[in-house]
Length: 536
Image (cartoon, rainbow, N blue to C red):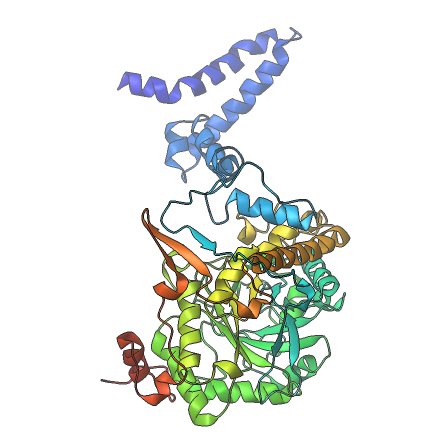
């Protein structure tokens, strides 16, 4: 017991005794600094003994603080000193380096061969042609969005900025992203935090995301205000309207903006009070059934002057999306586009259980949505976007091969404007000024420089995609499909994506002759009048 006490309190006792013992000798020139240090450490030790929150500090005064210091800097130590190039937590060093290089217009070429283990299960690649195609101008990689019920179709880039709200991101981050989108002729999704003055400043194309909080078109009771919506939606800068049903990192949870990040400006933009967390409801109040959702889409399309209207969601219960498709067939109302978000998507703040254990990953969700639209003869009328951990040309090719028409990226463009993956987005202490409302911190983000980096990253990524497609013998991204991509299944087996996945035939669901048991069962459970499953 005595030895235990000695190990726990020895250093504290030494600091106290040294401080008291050296006081009579302060006239020695070199001793004063050590006496001051001893006094400071002694006061820290006394504070550790008196505080009641941390048992380690009470049992190990002074020394116990080392534990919290090391814990505080652990992410940085791991990221810069210990983490391997291929460790994806959540993005690997090699992925981040690729974005940084392309954003700075530096060469991303690597010498001496791949660092990837090409014989490891899960390794993916695109097969090439013995007769490569001529290189296509990536500026031609556009997608026309707007179905038969749309009066103002929009020609979107194949690669765009995914939803990130002002409030979660700083004013300078929003400025840089939007100016970069303007320079590169691609769109900038506002996120559910509404359209801020910083989205308007440089005039880049906007997709207005409408979440369950209806920020920017919100009545005093928190419900949808049609008049306020029309006033913003009809402005020329807003190109499309996106209803957010859920997002990958926290499906079914709603949005969270901590109160310490809410400024008067954010409160004014969103139409919310200050001094309390801004929590978007987990469900919409404007509709409660698949049919009502489509009626809401039709209402927004009319209020916006006929602009493309769609929705974004992370797949959950399969029968719920199939219920929406059944409602499309019954009502004749179609969304112009659907964006599928994978559970690997990012967020500023969410419970760990949601980020780790809720939602369907992008590949499975996208394939299911694509198949359902094909099987109901609606795929040619509705465009599909994909978002969720997309930063490279191969990431884009991979989602195009299983059904997407275009891709969005959020964290990729955050890296382009300086994000270092410190994972402090929710603390208001972002070290690079990207995800903070601290005026001094965000001042470090120079808009003109970072806007050019956003433009560079977009342009260089699409050029890399054009080179990959040419190597595969393809002229345009629309030509890539599941037979062009390959995945290693084991040390001795590889399979084309076309061999791995089930692809429905056109009209298969509505014909009644459904080949897959899973799709047949889910289709029979789906209801147009409710998100609840039909009873067997």
